[in-house]
Image 1: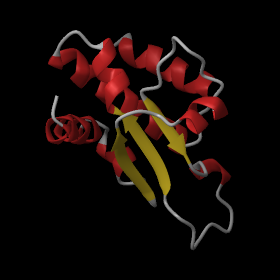
Image 2: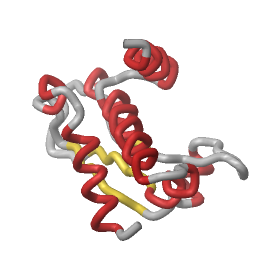
Image 3: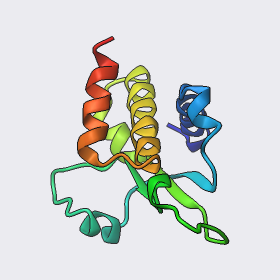
Length: 125
């Protein structure tokens, strides 16, 4: 898939986030990379055979006190691992949407356990 098309899918995933959350996003860049770096994988202790679809790097909103004049937080969506797993464009779209939601939840201060709980509640509707 061409990067321009993948970018449209990411924009669609961002657009699927409820407006009340999008309005509270501040100082966050959402970028696309082909693959995670070895440093990113090592930092998260992700070994061979596992994939990383997205990554939030920054200071969650719940930990910001006296926050100002800092570089933006960064959410990275990784194109190649998503494409390798997905069997169709529709599946890519779903993974991208879920990954964007997951990483934005980290921005709002949810740890991995809370994000997974919220995702399971969201899917049960």
